[in-house]
Length: 383
Image 1 (cartoon, rainbow, N blue to C red):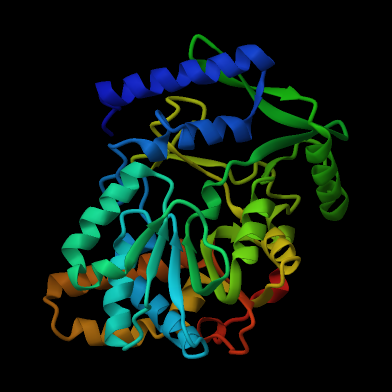
Image 2: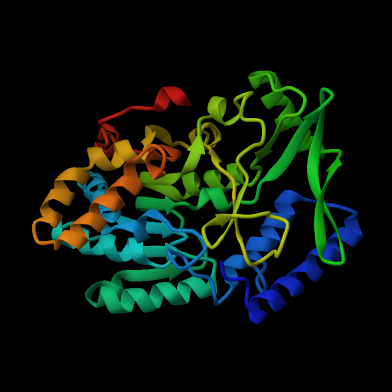
């Protein structure tokens, strides 16, 4: 494992000073605030670093980086939805390296279903530059259709895609101890950060109390709750006039998320594909928590969205023709490339890999279709 270089260490030290200043002013900060600054500080945050690298050489890898088959399956779903829309664009949130956009546009062209516009909402200037460079090289014929946005559009018609976006929203941590609810906050001194239990604010206490009563959480239970999720989902749902929001992320329905046996939550931190301590070297590591998909639909429904589907990534990809596409692709491959193709399919679909851990949810508005990707295995009962 390669340690952070001098530039990364300097950025982490600068971010640590910013965190330390807030802690000194408030005595402790919520983990949500720590995570927000660690990932999104405009000068020193992880996603704002010029050195950020998503893929096999970076800290984590997403499905679009594993195989173009992922985007090709999504393209089939997008194409089906577009048949019901007179005019429909695609809006991708947090487009990573731009690989999903590139592969998706290529496949939509083959399906004669190119969107008039492909919008990308990306808050990271560093990732936006990477996306522009990649897309200029890989899809020059469609580059004029791609528009980067600084804010979410209003009155949107089309398909909104969010692949591994929700798991990066800052989340609060809580602890149940002696039948009492505590917040797991962050303290620090001289750039060394540690956990400390503090009294939760009223809204956090109310939300966690409801979870405790609903799921019978007992002493020793540690987990997280994402108070940033409801306003984000509400904003997305309000922006959509007609179409589908397709959310792809690590997560569970609420009953599974807060199962009494899941005693340590889902918080994870990755440095070069290895799990790490989220409180060390802030700004150099990715931090995530799983998504409570029950909370997603509850908030989207308040803004006119309906639950059009919920299933595992494996079931979604297979329903969209993954194996048929793989069969066609393998015809012209060398033995070595065919092996890599099979390995990619395993990573995307096996329960121990991404297949079961990642879920796909579709939220629709003013759409009557039964969506292709959810025809194999309906998991809505899990919500």
